[in-house]
Length: 142
Image 1 (cartoon, helix red, strand yellow):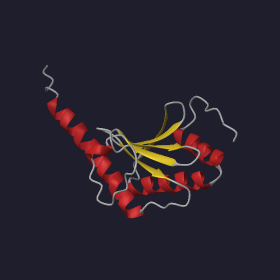
Image 2 (spheres, one colour):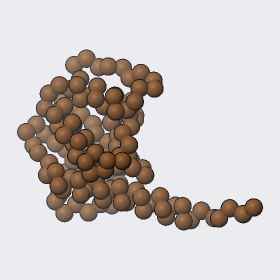
Image 3 (cartoon, rainbow, N blue to C red):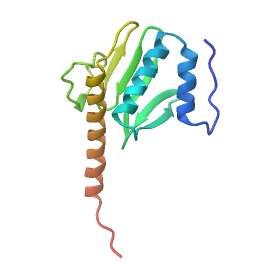
Image 4 (cartoon, rainbow, N blue to C red):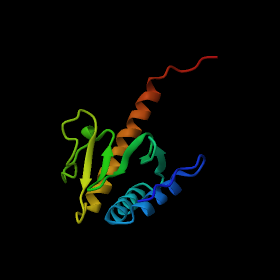
């Protein structure tokens, strides 16, 4: 697999497009599908490229990252341990105190509705934290 070196100033969305094209197999299809679901769940989501090549989706903070490995596409939710997961989508990093992940292997499908619900819950958690932080700031006096 040929790796494309990111160019400074290139939009994250293009870098993610490039990553998907580089993969060119089931991982590309999986990452592309999950990206589409994230955008459907939150049309205002911000795509970022962090940590030397990790697709990241944010809204008032990081929602999740999308990593691709030889045998798995991993979606890591930064605050996953604080999210309700009634559909039991989280199947990795379950012992951590903060994050949780969804490992998707070749041939597996993630329930789209449950995934979008999880994305929206992560956004609500981020937004609540931003609002709480803003409420704690003392008012500026002149």
